[in-house]
Amino acid sequence: MILDIGFDADDTLWHTESLFQETQARLEDILAQYAPREEVEARLHKTELANVRLFGYGIKGFTLSLVETAIEVSNGQVKASEIQELLMMGKAMLDAPIDLMPGVHAVLETLRAEHRLFLITKGDVLDQTNKIDKSGLGLYFDALEVVQEKSVESYADLFEKHSVRAPHFLMIGNSIPSDVLPVLELGGFGVHVPYHITAVFERADNDPAHDRFHRLDALAELPDLVAQLKGARRRAS
Ligand SMILES: [Mg+2]
Image (tube, rainbow, N blue to C red):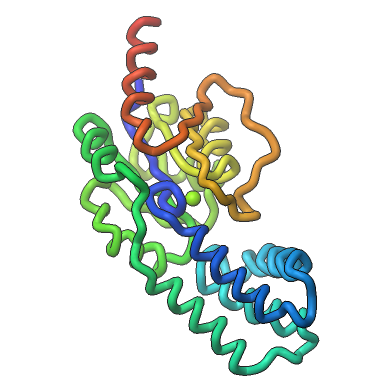
């Protein structure tokens, strides 16, 4: 029986990755005279991975990685005006309006009638809190949690904090490593709802082979899945 449901936020409740991709494309334009696009992309990803330990996830760290990549790829030749443009793009990303996925309000309204709902996101606390405010979705949730990493340990801490029993918990999100695997390991249900682009941190090579793993084409299908899982449980008992 599913009692509690956790939702990822970025690229699950609202679009985020498309903003990152647009900014990255502009970096590649600026650096086109120094290196091919694929090389710029690879260097940026390498820089982001190296920096995440220091900056955490989120737009501020991404913006600093853009600047670092621009300086390195251009061997220090990138213009101050171009650096300024990258910084402005980072600020514009932080300030961008929230673009909700289709059907989000209806899904949350339906499920909150019978379930505790948690919003569980990782990244920069200020940025994530601003997005939650701008989204207008905060009122649907019993708790809003911003964690540094979505790991077995951080989910276990949240379960303890909110008296969640893992076998009664379902997490839905666009990342298999962050939203699905740790929850399956703890004994909960993991639902993957893929986004058309996946950040380099959030890619997985294989689907988890697990009877508590599910995949949906869209968030709007979640209430039906939850109803099915409850039905299956009732028939089995
Ligand atoms: Mg996400």
